[in-house]
Length: 338
Ligand code: XIL
Image (tube, rainbow, N blue to C red; front, side):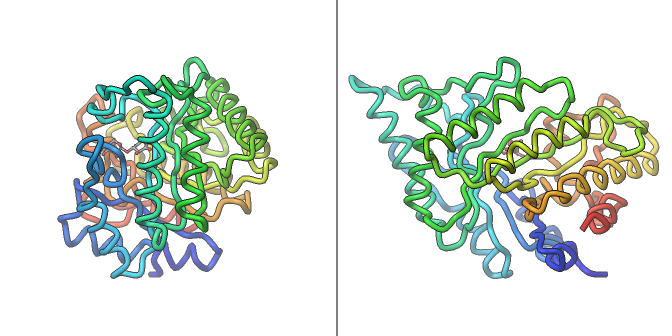
């Protein structure tokens, strides 16, 4: 059977997934990625926490390995992420950093140096960067306060990151990436994202696309579309506004939480697949969506097993291949959506 990469390519869609420390040593898993994907994104290895042991040094060892392997297998690479705008994911040294007597210029220096070093190092390989990740507090709709934004201001921090990335990687697609808050009841988060993007456009800040992470489905229902808690009309209004600004869309981190689903594997997998299909049909009805990335291919390595374990402790089944790398109904759903 054709790979997801081949099926996607036939429709002008780049399909891919993430690899990283938790699985890169597994040769069978690397082979699965090389077979199914056109595009790879390092799961952690290009984040500040991985690249920056301290304020002075960069350590590119792990990121370079993934990039080298991707190139050797003719796979494209996405960059994730030049700035994770949330202190939960900021390295400890940066949170403890002494910004000195001129904190604004010190923050600007650190940010500019980081973004320009990383973006220029990978500019010949990476044609799409998540420049800023998760900048909004979903509960308040305000821009997060971080070690860098305290002296610089939130908007200014984000603007500098994009402007610096554009100079360092002139041809790359520059993406603002966010988890969006899936539940229909968090309109506030999405509204804040729209205002952020609008402001950037107005200020002439070079943002090209919105990355929709797509960690789907903490609630399911058997609505006709299978989209459960996603309010389809509200979603379309949101996506219409984003594309109306001239921005492209990417599905950057697709997986499906199966916590609330029953223990029986067949029906869990069927509902995850139905949800995936309905969601991708919606996203791919926008011609601006030309990249679809899963956050892992196999249930064996899903981050959700740690981040959001099932209450019944059963292994989670959020991805297109099972723990033994056998294709699941979710894989068929992705193939069919293409
Ligand atoms: C996650 C990784 O999968 C974990 O291994 C790591 O510990 C934390 O980050 N949104 C993102 C990704 O943008 O970077 C996150 O990845 C998942 C949620």
